[in-house]
Length: 303
Figure 1 (cartoon, rainbow, N blue to C red):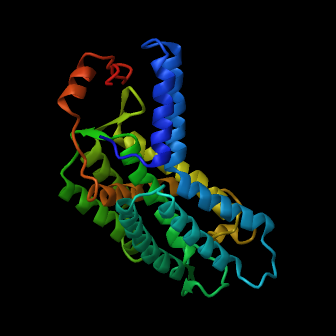
Figure 2 (figure 1 turned 120 degrees about the vertical axis):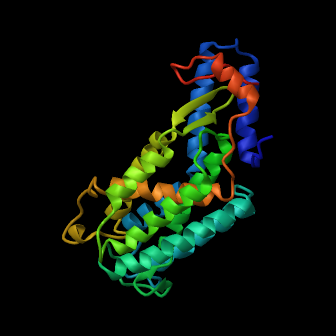
């Protein structure tokens, strides 16, 4: 049984009421599946979307000479968003533990990367560690929030998921390379090949509402990395942080960063997988897939 929050249960109940009046397999069912997919994706992104909205608002309207530094305002706003998420039971305490892991892992990388000049924040405010404002960790936490929520919202199941100790080694090597490539050989392309080798046979099954769909897990990594890259462009436009080539004036983040975010997705997946163990598809669902429409990647209704 899926462990929905109150809002998620409301979405699910509304879709059930709507589909109870629909003919099985009709256009109404397909449209409902599409709408529910969009609602679930939007809901999974709620923490990151709220944080990004605050960053944009601060860029457009925050006073230049306010008594509270903009970076400190962003940190306080991020904490408030997180508290509200828990207080209104929009996020579970189990998910919060994973999000805190993302926060720590991200902040450590931020401290190093700003020190070597990979990117920079405006030197203002007191809520910071060195040159890193504390709100930066919440941006990584937003990725963690999305990951744990889609795991639950879409009832993810996997075929041929690699052994977790192997994925942990690959993720560890990726994390080390984020630091080590400044001093020794940059192994990102070797690591990309390792990711393809380890995850290449894995297929992810996800339930939108009544139907299960499937997708190669590497495609899902790429799609999420692409959306993070779009968000990064918005963040740098808002001057929440800047790359060296953006100091004289904003320009789009290099598409090369897409590879970095793709590799970061592996770290994210491994962190989540140690809390939510990847489960194989149940025998009933597997039977439906075998008798469904394999070319389209859609199963017959499972409820």
